[in-house]
Length: 197
Image (cartoon, rainbow, N blue to C red):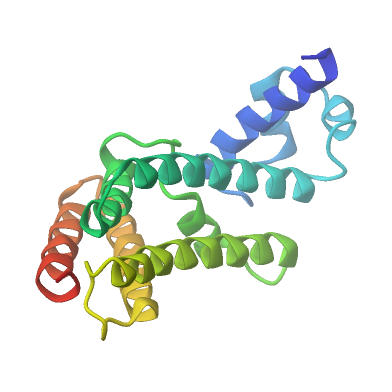
């Protein structure tokens, strides 16, 4: 890897941690220069603006999550275990986070407003990818006669994602994993009793 690529990777790594733990608006360029030991000019050689750095950092976090989740899902042989992978990933945000600071999608969704429309758009795209991934698990489950034919995949995806994000928010706010555990256990019971054949 060339020196410029290493520098860019270093900036992204530090900025990712800062944005996801401290917040996008609360993280200043000075925070990033302090963390990297680089000047503002060095950072701007790799990123047009703080906003473009925010977008790349968010995309990097979501890519890492989607790659990890896809690997875990592909390793499972049935709908139940594939859905449980999703639930267990969210549970790990509190006890053993893949990325420090909790769910990047939740953090951006809470913080983003109309001042950074491009970041908001990237978050909407990530949510769409996530929703469609859950829907695909349900659709494939129907094809393989593991999920009831009348199960609505859009409803399942919406309930799963919103419940998990809410559980992460409550657990992060209280510095306790009890709420996300309650949500995950409830969703597992729901999947087994109402979704699977």
